[in-house]
Image (cartoon, rainbow, N blue to C red; front, top):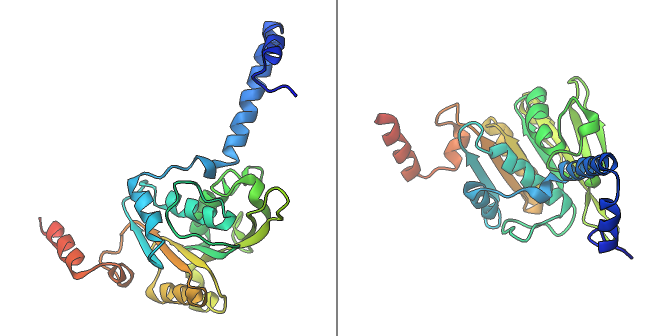
Length: 252
């Protein structure tokens, strides 16, 4: 067997006409770029605050990632969800670990915001079905999906392969997308391993989502930019000292 770095292979390539060699290189580069885009999870390297957020999941069922716009909150949430859904835990991972397939929800304020934020980060561009698999969930881990009704390009659920490899058959995780606007009743009934709130939910929705995870000792994450001030949900995660420090900052 010859490897790609074999002297024989290299000499054959170098003997090709320049035009043919250039075309071969471009095709190889395009294939490499495609493979990379379909496995972004393997490339994810969190910065310090993201890493701390992930690690906290090992000891806390409820977590909040509160920061300004474009600071990687949703990216962190999406990559954590993809990690748990697939069971592909990297060497640096020191957060919560699930030993088997999971049932997760990911939610936003409306169907449109759920599609444009958590779904986009997890699956890829919502309006380009051929690009689904270029988000945090690797292309080869996506087994199937079901579209939602009423909102163009919004997905209702995704079946994700968990584990597998060699002679081991992959199992199946289930990811469903939700919206706060549907009301608390749409959040009842399910038993889940995790709920991800992207943007701050109303307190009753947050409480109902947390309840869904109680039986399995699941996890709840909230990733959002604080636009509502000191809301009930924000207050759940802050100590009196935290609140006093924030009030000092506002007074300056």
